[in-house]
Amino acid sequence: MGRVQWKSPGRFLHWQERLVHMILAIFAVITILTTIGILVVLGTETYQFFIKAETTPFEFLTSRKLEPEADPPKFGIVPLIWGTMVVTFGSCVIALPIGLASAIYLSEYAGSLTRSILKPALEILAGVPTIVYGYLALMLVTPALRYTLELVGIKVDTYNAASAAIVVGIMIIPMVSSLSEDVLRAVPQGLREAAYGLGATKFEVCTQVVVPAGLSGIMASFILAFSRAIGETMAVVLAAGQLPQISGNIFTSVQTMTAYIVSVTSGDAPFGTAEHLSLYAVGSVLFLITLCLNLFSGWILRHYREEYS
Amino acid sequence: MASPDLSPANSGPHSNTVLRTESLSVFYGDSQALSDITIAIPQNQITALIGPSGCGKSTLLRCFNRMNDLIAGLRIEGQIWFHEHDLMDSAVDVVAVRRRIGMVFQKPNPFPKSIYNNIAWGAKINGFLGDMDELVERCLRRAALWDEVKDKLDKSGEQLSGGQQQRLCIARTLAVEPEVILMDEPCSALDPISTAAVEDLMEDLKADYTIVIVTHNMQQARRVSDMTACLMLDANVSQGRRVGVVAEFSPTDKLFTNPTDPRTEAYITGRIG
Image (cartoon, rainbow over all chains, first blue to last red; front, side, top):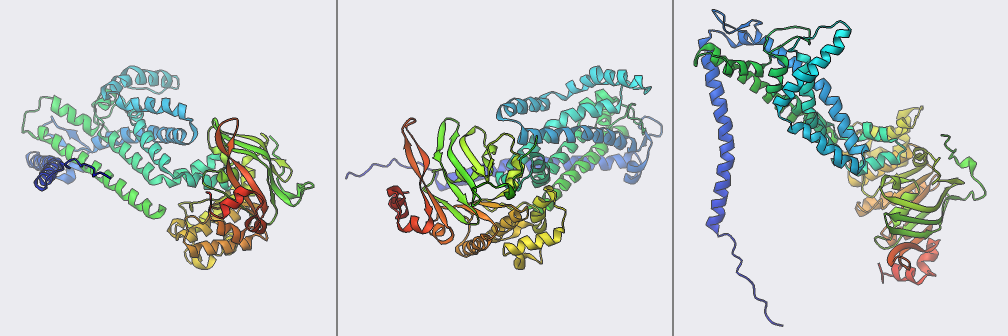
């Protein structure tokens, strides 16, 4: 038996391994530094704002008067928070049920052919530029709302929160459906078989076994969609307009936090003025809300994981 | 759609036979998995299905409660009778069938619910109107699990050990009051002590239930079963593929001591398989 020739392994030497380690670590650190940089800028500029505007965080968060161009200017962001919440909750009312129902359909009911067509089609929704949703709201949704609701005597403004909520809702459906479907498909087949084996109907298996087993992931997808809706800008600016008001009527204009930031940056507020600096303060609030939502979704995942494994 | 009454009261002349197949063949798409299976499962006995890997034991077991319906592309020819009801009849309510013919799976699969709700869920969806606490206790006692879990009924079923989970799954099956329990290698994921516990339990359940068990473990088949069907892979002449057939179906003692089929003998003595 002849000896087999082995090629020289040519693997990395020790110092090469260390080099790779360092390069990878540098890239990882860059992302952290970026986050820290954003936090520092937001923090210092927000601090500057409170000095320039001669206001307190408490007043900023609780005052209902937002008149940045008045003299003296007033910065109370309750109208912005209100506008943001109307649009965000409205969009979730649309996206969560439709997204979850699509996920259940795709995961549990659809055949493989149907799924191979429907799933990419749903995900196209996520690829449509948000500005397109904005003018869809102006050109399609608002006229349609106006036409139907005027039959029952409800007046719909050109810029209104309802249209914004509808298009943002459509926009975030794929987030809910795609993530939830992945979660549902990851539920072990053994659980479905166990349930069928006890004489459960398909509907009972889906709603009482599969969905509860995937609940933590479904909740996480809801929260991600919610924070996506909060941060949405272009579609909302086009659809809901720029009127910071607190109104129970969802068919009038509102201004969201993101829309306010757009209006300040695109306006002619001089650099360094309280009005200009206020966009950092609003940005900080937006950041804190999103951060809390992310922490909350992490808590939900942990909480349910304890119960379900 | 009127679903036939599946109760044993409607049993015909074969009152000792609970389940029966006649010339049963199963196909996955174009490839045949089982050919010409004709066996009769006797009441209140334990019937073991043994045979080498891939011979279709589990596929046969899953025919008995229509679990194969969940597999796309699977086709069944021939007949399966539950008492005198044709299980393959399109008018049969599979939900009712599965309630009467329960199943325990290879991998313990408790629901991610509390121990209590693991038992109660099946009864609830099937419209149980009695005392649920009493039912849960009775099923857990019957599955020899009550003493181990009575103080933690609200804990998740997934927190139990593998052997306890499998007994929980058996208890869960008992809660819907089946007549037959199908067990698909119920001990293959368990350690020897848990296996012994489940085997003792099967022996005990035999008085009230008819049990069909698929097992890889010939010693287990020999220990627990009354009847044994030995499945084999046979060359299918027309297709040129190997498909599962029943080589021998006899009382367990006879099959293991005096097999009539040479392939069975070769298998149980470890020469093939």
